[in-house]
Length: 585
Image (cartoon, rainbow, N blue to C red; front, side):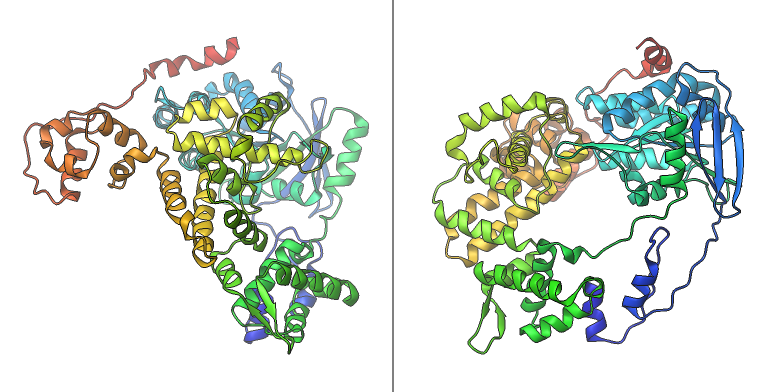
């Protein structure tokens, strides 16, 4: 829709690039552009299938076939395919379908990789490992990752926090890590090429869908990571087969086939409503004729029949009208209401804006959990899923907190019931976060990663702000103070009693609670406490004490007595023996 707006408003030059789109001619026709195709690749790519000690390759550029024998030297067959590349000084990227598999496969590879690490590389990897897993309060997954890194292998998925992902990615780019086991999200978002890419799992399991083969487009994205420019003369993408029949099927379906055609996201009513509201709120379109002209410039319109387009647009306009996000005048002009304008400026789903308005206008009182669950019910909020083992516990929690819920639970037989359980679980995670539950306890208790928690928190913080803005313009200002307080608690992950303290630069949930436990409840008391006494508080030290005083406007004189902060530490010397640890598992 953004391109459609540009094409309608100004004459502009558009350059569209893709490595995997199969219907590029359709895109070119829509953009009225010249299509330029090129099969050139900086590093030649061979795609193949491994079966019983042999990889049969296809080079689609040269139409040549080749076979490579892989020596069987490990109990784990996949380790043979990995070490075959490491023996030639290459790196390996292994794609598996689940987070659990990334960890288990990395553990299996670990004992085989020590001989590929120089002393210098090992020293660097141990330093990286200490940054990740040395705190006793670190989540178990972080400690596992740290130990694995020190043996030259790591796992990568969206559950890791940003720092962990960055450290892993940098170590792989610098050729310190020899093997990286990842979920397919890595192929779509991060440029981490390797000599050989192994796609172990070509099927994926989803709770509401079961097991199904991944799209060809996704395979091509993973295979496209093979071959490091400037370092490799070739790249290899290898699928894993268990039978001759499966091998033939993989070659036909993934290697020799074209990726699926892409289609416009405006096919979704949710996406169309969002963009139409934005167009009306900004007065880009003021009536149905102008809406139709805008839609005619979209890729959606170029690929669908006019009757289907008209019905699709009419349904979206009707939704916006019924939700009082826009109004249609007697002369058939569209204007955005105050709610519609605010929803568009907040960049939230129109359905979210309607839900916030309706729920908060009906409820005069609410609990913290009730508001958190309302946020998790919004279409914009990412939520986790509930495993079978968690269903009973989640249902008991719903029964115990039924009166707090601002959204009535669906019937167990309804299609939305599973999603509802996920919303409740996510709301519980957010409540643990603002209750100062440790990262380790949250991740262990709810089987999520800190990357997930941070993603939930970041989105919820924005939606809480959006809810407060909507109440501001819908005559429900009584909710604003509690929403604003909840937003601050989400931002810092704290209880309300230390909000004033964590507003200081460098003071987070751990230091804030430590200061509070020492009887320093507010900024006035921090101002009065002697700097030497402040520095002796665990986790503070001289440097942080001076920073706090300066932020409070106190003139700080340099002192010769420098006190280091007492941080949580761990004996990480045992990391040297991790190979034996993994071997014995």
